[in-house]
Length: 361
Image 1 (cartoon, rainbow, N blue to C red):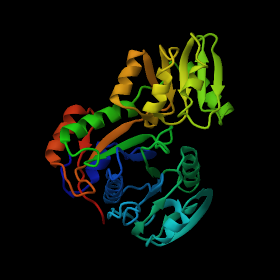
Image 2 (spheres, rainbow, N blue to C red):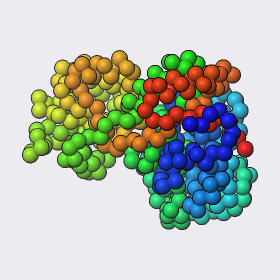
Image 3 (tube, rainbow, N blue to C red):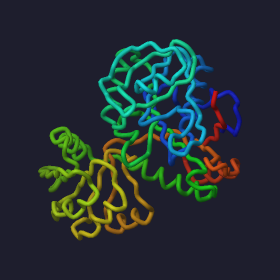
């Protein structure tokens, strides 16, 4: 395993199995979790190992700016090598100091302007400001692959109620955690373990209900709630269009039948939504399905109540979490003891855990 140092990063590609991937999302357990630092390590490892395939980068939201727009704290910048593809908004590209060749316009608008596809013609710093929804990320990837079909497409992602780095839009995920979540190593390990439990929620089985939900979502893209009643031989479906999930738990529960076995909710599933559903006695002995594990924002207590009601959790798109990256620092200057934090995380988790150390070229 890697220690807290700036030793050559080539091992990182092997530990996380990145060399054969087509797409990767980097998500953080909290703000300032170390996503950009992790990205910089991957970029450096890719260059040091002389990979033939180019990297292609975008972001859900904004990354690579010199300081946090809200807190004013200094942030690591993103340093790319010539040949890297960048999908970023116009105003963010204007703040980049690498020479860029414009390849395509995406037609996707953000608060920072239209997302533009470029190729770096020189080494330098870039700022990423990409789309905020999964469907637009898919558009960006398809556009990129018209120019570089074999690239490794990396999404500097998010783990928030408004956006996600899942929904089948990346093959694998790296989770970044930091002292921002907790300055106690044992507590941080516990929080990370629970987060991974939700992120790695099992895929919906058998295939027939999953395929039925896929068809329903395609037929009714504006709907947020779908149900399957009956059995494998004769599923009946129902759906509901709501402006959001929050505040509509009672309305959702009223559609439940004694033979409802699967309930799909499109969007972020929070404690508040689950509490609204649990208030209805019909919400029991079924499977609650979401797009992927990044859509669950549940507390351990809420998860226990679901299990007590015999409600299972499942996803349509599984997440392959390859690596946990530890950032032992906090934006207020408080630091974890790195070795103790690594030991606690490795004792609890079954996937590799590394502290890559700082990387801001």
